[in-house]
Amino acid sequence: MKQSQMLIPTLKENPTDAEIQSHQLLVRAGYIRQIASGIYSFLPIGRRVLNKVENVVREEMEKIGAHEMMMPALEPSELWKETGRWNTFGSELMRLHDRHNREFALGATHEEVITSLVRHEVKSYKQLPLTVFQIQNKFRDEARPRFGLLRGREFLMKDAYSFNESYESLDETYQKMFDAYSNVFRRLGLNFRAVIADSGAMGGKDTHEFMVLSEVGEDVIAYSDTSRYAANIEMAPVVTTYEKSTEAPREIEKVATPDQKTMKDVAEFLGHDLEQGLKSILFQVDEEFVLVSTRGDHEVNDVKLKNLFDADIVELASEEDTKKVMGTGFGSIGPVGVSEDVKVVADLAVEAMVNVSCGANEEGFHFTNVTPGRDFEVHEYADLRFIEEGDPSPDGEGIIKFARGIEVGHVFKLGEFYSERMNATFLNDQGKAKTMIMGSYGIGVSRTLAAIVEQYHDDRGITWPANIAPYQVHLLSLNPKKEEQKELADQLYDTLLESGIDVLYDDRKERAGVKFADSDLFGIPVRITVGKRAGEGIVEVKERATGEQSELQRDEIVSYVK
Ligand code: ATP
Ligand code: MG
Ligand code: MG
Ligand code: MG
Image 1 (cartoon, rainbow, N blue to C red):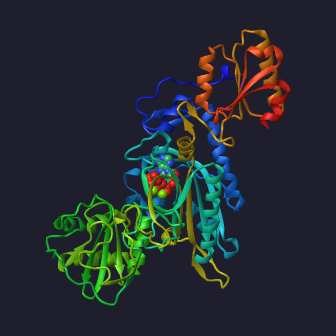
Image 2: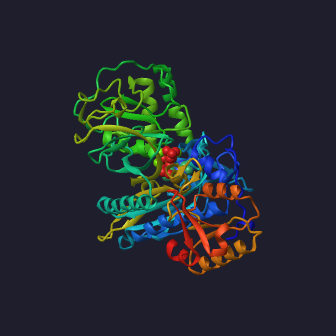
Image 3: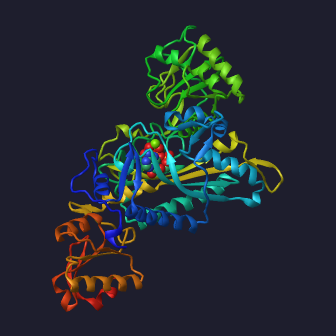
């Protein structure tokens, strides 16, 4: 490509709103431009890098037998209502109406869409396991879009979904995905860790995040140098495993009165702010218990609750029901050894609130009426919020260290959460209808691109790993007005292209200083400068990352680059 004809607007100064290196450099070097908060255009060289990251992801997905497809970005609200996420997803979901006043969401994720497709098209165990993926823009109305591509409101994601006939089969798919993710991030040259994302109720193996180690990461991970242990502090367990004891919870701290008609009332009465993350209240109705909880990341919490109480946690059927019980739009309710019927449980809970005593937990599962270790047998206890650097790691095999991380990937065993609600079943080899077992797997492709820049830059610009760089060679003709320089540079350009080498050719009539500065900003691995010694057929070659310089004859160039 000839630079004189390309749109690569470079900037001398950092954009004022850009706080971190990847944001500053990608804008300054002409890779991206912001169009609105958290929304970016990829300019031609940005698109090239994005393609390369995408392709690494695509290749590793295809290697494990996942097939690429493409789902619509517009998702009808009906599907989201089937799973209850129309209510629970909250304001991150971008919602809109069509001309007939039908509601839609802009795809934040595609579990509902894929499940609705698969329930119609897959009928038999013979068609399973099945894994599909897509690479597509996602929309999330983030509360704080920031750090350029790291937290956008429209961003590129690879999302994959698997359907299996059993949990054992899901385990196999999950492991393949886990390995594929490790390959992706290794091939991208990233320093990363796979961490336990939530080992709370899930035994520490059912969801992992892939974290690129970086000071600008928004997550904190606890890891051990000498063992494989690593977990996200945010999601890390307060309690890793509980087993239900036979004894009923005792010691009720506060007793609600008939005035407390909703969860919100009760929470207020107990002095808890419902908006601040997960809150659960356990109600006692005669001998049985009903758990009502507000939820942040509801899939995670549902599984937590499910394991904790060995109960089916179901969402309230309608927004109306939810409001009735919770006093807010969001929430779930679970019978603990009670009925599976949502309505019955909702009624029970409402009744429970006005008739019986209750207690609440604060953050996570610290029950003020239930004490772990007494009412529930505690199997493994690791509250990472209280762990300090230098402590033994929970696996007992290392010493805890902390690091900041950027979440670039997330693999998740969903189980039956979606398939059950959306009735995605198949006939097993006995001809019996079974619920499909699902997994979902995301990679933030555009976020990963930025994470690469966080790890590959110096004070002059980006230093791309060779396989991701927009071009392999940056060819500069220092003074194209001099005939011999222009001629040699033109010839080299043709030769490189003919040899299948991607080359960006700075043929602009600019000062040498400008060309060098831009070249350093772009971060293309090899720079070839045609200058004073063009007459002798000699050019200067410089490695961007190391600064290593040499002079080469024109006919040595191709073999040097290859
Ligand atoms: P975060 O905790 O950073 O908000 P998430 O857990 O909400 O991310 P997932 O639902 O797990 O994200 O989505 C899969 C992947 O998509 C994430 O691992 C991340 O790499 C990427 N991603 C999520 N949100 C954004 C965003 N706002 N901008 C860019 N990439 C994102
Ligand atoms: Mg998020
Ligand atoms: Mg996350
Ligand atoms: Mg995640």
